Image (cartoon, rainbow, N blue to C red; front, top):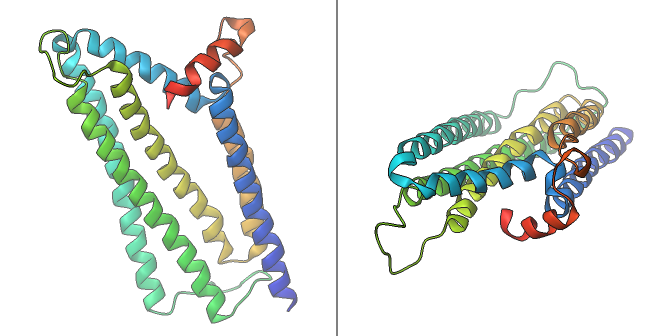
Length: 236
């Protein structure tokens, strides 16, 4: 019974820390994009798309090559995710390989099944998110090379629309990468709830410095609050 209480407490607390941090991060990205890496990258991707589409015949090769590199990165992550999902599924079908020593954790058959299934869900989610990223990047690689000024189109194509497509592909790629991050605490959960909880704290600590930036503020010539308000509705 005490081991179950440890699992309930540490696992739920660790997951709550991860969810709380990402909820706060989404708020920062939406309300103050110039203070987050994702927001700054999204704003500058829109600018890059606009520059590429101003002279599509000249910049088309560069734009398509850049997007193809992103497709290759998403393809690599998607391949890794589906491969790891297959490995976890095989381990579950064979009863699962238990560690030699579990640290104060639930050792029941149901407990191990839940742990392996949670890891499997993470990898499947990472696969689906990266597939969506490939989808948006593939669409953008065609749209970004359309010569808008030379060929009239019945549907007016704008750089803002293509920028949103590129940003959506990047957002799906970032979410797929987050699914890989989430798999680390779940993997350590196999060895007990305490390693899983400590991994959640360490992961949030590291992600805080990877997700936020303090170099683009109003005092250093960055965006002020009004500029952020103007850019927020259209940067995603």
